[in-house]
Image (cartoon, rainbow, N blue to C red; front, side, top):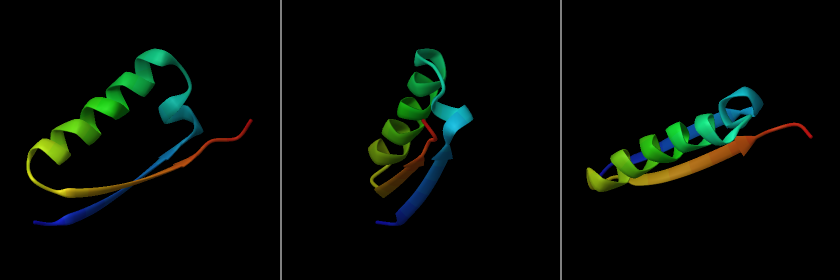
Amino acid sequence: MDTIVLKFGGSSVADNIKLNIVANKIIDLYDQNNNVVVVVSAQR
């Protein structure tokens, strides 16, 4: 089991469509039996 760290900035989670794309990437990696650590750095 690998540990994968992902970082997403503001433009990656700027709207619901992009947020769903990010979420699906996280789910896919998790479903492949990986530990997933996610860092979201979005400005307000």
